[in-house]
Image 1: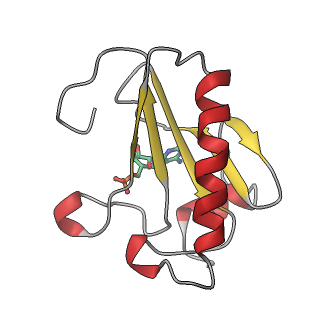
Image 2: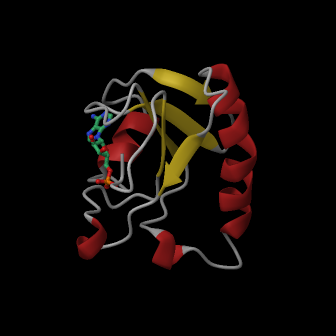
Image 3: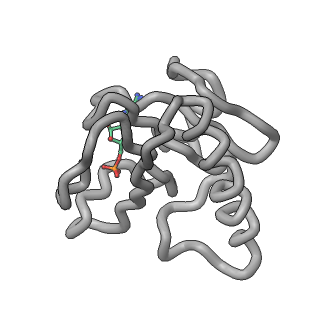
Length: 113
Ligand code: AMP
């Protein structure tokens, strides 16, 4: 989508600090980290949010959850980490492109980070 921030990052139109990439997925560092490690994992295909996950595209989500442990390991998160996906206004979703936050590097509270 032409007006989507994360689509622009995926297209290389906006810079990001990439930590992982394959044909289906890009992972990059959050610009405003809430923990010592804060990585965003996004499907390259535009999916707006969790509500937009369907039988047709859910394999992308499964793939994301396959790569998350590898990213966490590469980031040195040996003592655990949190995966968060905000969906809609009450969750505080600010970018309307499905993404999963990987947070770690310190003990996390029950707040998002
Ligand atoms: P959410 O609030 O769950 O929609 O998460 C969106 C995340 O995107 C926030 O944690 C922002 O800090 C992050 N973010 C916004 N713009 C950028 C950017 N240009 N590069 C990296 N992360 C970004």
